Image (tube, rainbow over all chains, first blue to last red; front, side, top):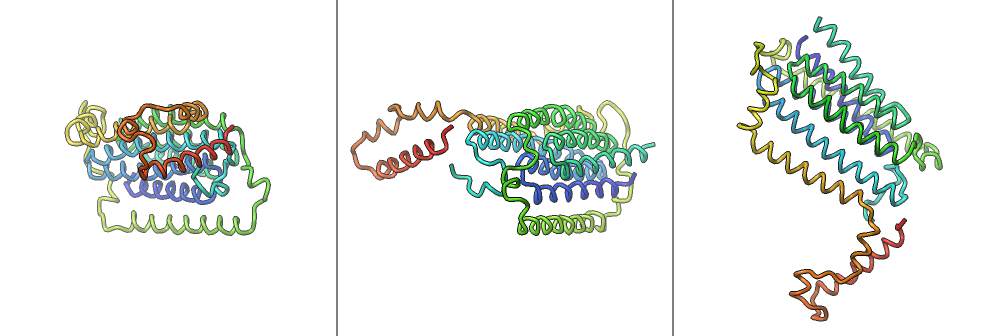
Length: 99
Length: 223
């Protein structure tokens, strides 16, 4: 398969994640859709890495995985803190982050 | 053979992504994301990224998704958010959602133009040459050598970032009650030794206000 097919798949996954981030209201699902966007970027990075036969793209993909794990850690911690304070789990209701 | 595998895996990737966005129950969204990640690992294998595919399956589809499942089970099965049930889908919200979907469609068109419409000639090729072997492109030995020689600084910064995120997660999700009570007592701090109470510093005037408002917030939201 030519590299262009992989790039098309990565663009579609990124756009689907963007739709989810902009339309869903549950912060858990918003985090999941952020993962989708990061995965689309990862697929493009690895496709370009294969295109040039160079390992730098794969290293960057591993770093993106690390950053995604950190983001999940912080995001889920915030959701658990929201739930403990009986605040609504809804991004439309959460107008202020002060507490 | 590889093209059949590509189309099967790409269908899995895209249908998993659609499932994450469309499904109402967050638990099913997490399961759809697991399927998406497994298909994506197949695509990575087709692109000769063996190490990244293994990391994807073990860490992402294994550890991170288990964390998600735990939080979904803890927060509860809220297929409809509370505000949505009370107010109903208002006219403003649905218009904004439609605008968001249109914006994402425009983003897709722009990305396709930017990625596929470039003048890169190698984009239509199968990629660079590949010779199998123990140190070949994408194997753990290859990635490990790169990480410990050329990208050593990146490696260390990533480990430090993981440490900070772990500490931040613990601080965010801890129970606040115990620590609030601990703050009531007079703690011996170096600044307290330098500035005994009653010296009339600016920090003292500001600090009393801050602590009183924080206590009010604690009683308001305290559970």
